[in-house]
Length: 244
Image (cartoon, rainbow, N blue to C red; front, side, top):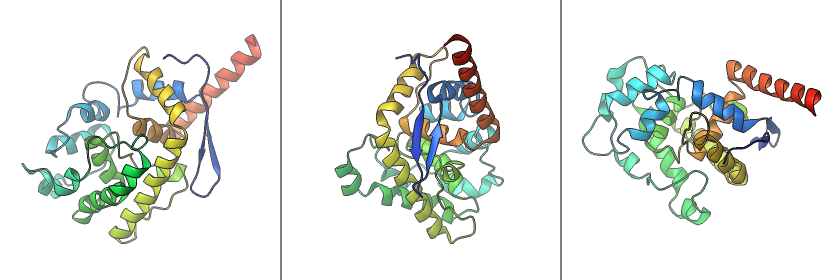
């Protein structure tokens, strides 16, 4: 469904402060139509829709570097992931699990946070890159479940140290992801409305609720997209003042 009225979101941060996101449907539409991570058939988001969800290949890492600013400098350090068998930590993440829609009893009984933490740990333990790169790879393979923890950590005032021991970083990332799940569930009707809006946009896109949420939070911290969001709000206020 195409949204005609602006849709604003109030996101609760980990420290109980609030982040007010304005004109979210239009901002998400602009992002997915224009950002290098989502624009075109060779983008990260397009690749995530069609890559093998059970295998990791060098092509996946190339896409992370080319269109998702992953800054993975030594591709050779990721070669141990290019196996014929599904890595056990990836196999443990059911493709049907969803950050927002998976019922609480399934989330708890399956220990989904623990499995995500294990997957993050397996990726970062053997290489110098950190949680951001790990979640970018995991989102590519489980795009409905794992959000990208990059600027998002700043948006929700999460703690994620670049110098802490790697197990500690995995635990910190899990706290942020669990918070995003809680907020995603609380805001589910609005996120689903944005998802429906995107599906019938001028350039239709189909994105998971996890991706929509992390993009909206990311744009609140990225300087370029933050300026675009402020411009949208300014235009909206001017239209209201001029035309009522």
